[in-house]
Amino acid sequence: MLTEEESEILGIVFGDGSLSRTERSVQIAITGNKFDDEIYLLRHVRPLFHGVFGLELTSRYRRGENTMDLYRYSKEVALTLQSWGMPIGLKKLENLILKLAVEGRSFIRGVFDTDGSVYRKYGPYAQIQFKTVSKNLMSFIRDKLTKLGLHPTRIRPDETKHRFLLCRQKEVETFFRLVKPSNPKHLERLKRIRLSIP
Image (cartoon, rainbow, N blue to C red; front, side, top):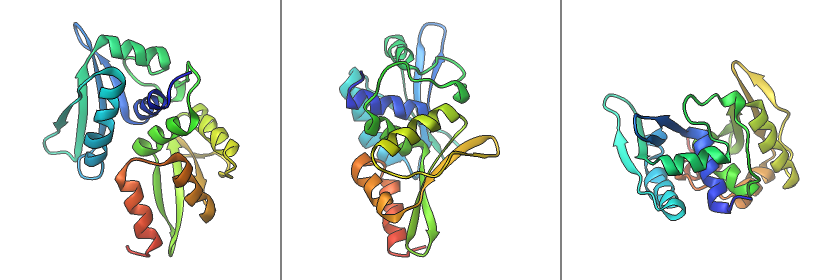
């Protein structure tokens, strides 16, 4: 079974990561929005990778785009991530399968911080959304949340993806308390919704 930190890293790379072969190595990259995700990537993801793998990720900002990456070349770390279920090469999200048991809350935190969203239902009421191409991944996360006593909606197709929501207001608070998201954009968004700030 993966540790809490390893489980969170796997959730992060499932959410917004990639492993790309080069001539002599493999590039590990985590991508985010340079405005919304910069603090999260630099202050949380980078130290997390260093603590688990001893790997110092480098930041890279793409010209003319709103995106940034943390990246590093390491065949050894890439093969470890592959053994956990993260494919090297084209990430076919519909085929993502966990190869090892994970600590559920930590894994969900990694996926939510990179690929989840919290948005206004109406007034001060918030909803949490999980949305991805992989129905298997959605089913896994939904099952874990159900075992935590939450009541997510059914998984529904949404164009090319699958999604479900957490809508009950007490359960939105419970989710934040149990899963403990680390991306400041989610915490700030929930705060603004609760205060009815546009």
